Image: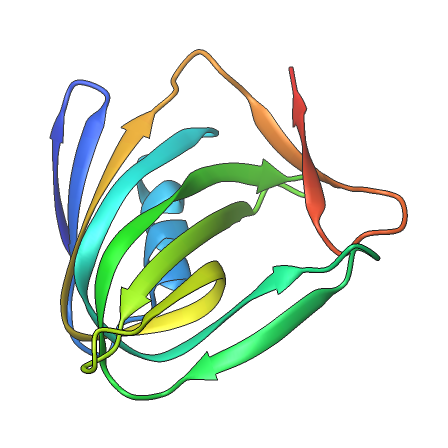
Length: 142
């Protein structure tokens, strides 16, 4: 992974074999920010696990094993109550047959490259806290 910074904007390149969540969490630790918006991402990934939250607040997971084109990525980075970086990301992929797969990204490993834009929110503090009856950690602002 490499990155460059212009004021509050970061452009990140993630390389083959690196996992997106782990890479962005490592970056948050390295730079030391508490809140960021993930505004865009493109590239080619493999071993994707994605899904959705059903009406009962339970995540349903799907696998997209074959390398696929990452056509859209967005989300945010906050901190958990114990201070660890937490990434919440949604994605759209296109497989080699141009079938689109989309949803909450649980994990995704880079096959060729990914380029991701982050906007650091230096005056915001976002904390991920448990929500009653759902698997998602909700945002708390301070």
